[in-house]
Length: 200
Figure 1 (cartoon, one colour):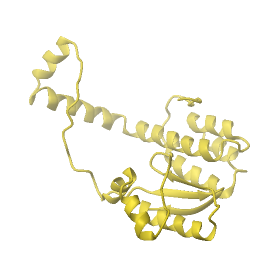
Figure 2 (cartoon, one colour):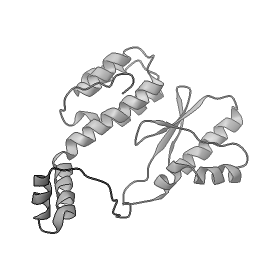
Figure 3 (cartoon, one colour):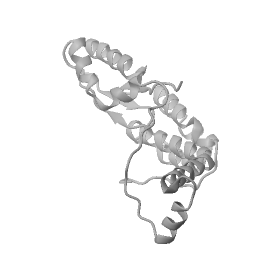
Figure 4 (cartoon, one colour):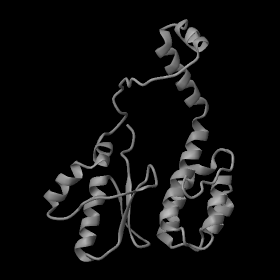
C-alpha cells in the first residue's frame, strides 16, 4: 500500500506540523488558536507548492470545508488509484496509425505498452527531476531571500549534493531540513542542468 500524501505547515520559518492533510490541518488550527496572527504557509510535499485551507470556525465546520478541498480526496485514498480509461485525442501521421493498428490488441493497447515501457526506462530520471522541481518550488517560496539561494538551486539542478548542502547550511533549521528532505531523491541520476527561471 502506498503512503498517503503528506503536507507540511510553517509559521514563519518554524515547521509546526507535517502529516496527512486532516491531521496537519487541525494542528495548524490549534496553533492559530494560540497565535491568531501567525503567518501560516501549508505545502503539499508531493509538489512543493503551497495550498490554501479555510480553517475558520469550529472543528466540525473546518472539517466540512476541508472535505470539499481538492487535496482531501487525494490524501484520503490509500494505495493505488482505481484504473480507468481516459479518452483524449491523439494526432499521428498515417504511417503511425498503420503501425499501431497492426499491433496485437490494436492502437490503444500498443500505445499503452509504449508509454509503460518509456516510463520504466526513464523511471529514475523522472524521479530525480521531480524531486528537484519539488524542492525548488518549496525553496522559492520559503528561502528565496536566504543567503546562497541561487547557488543552492544551481547545485540542486546540477546534481551536486555536496555544494547544495553547503549552500543551504546557514538557512533557518526547519527550512533547511525540509528542503533537504524534499531534495533527497534529486541527486540519484544525472540529468541535464536545467534551472527553472522566473515565470516557468
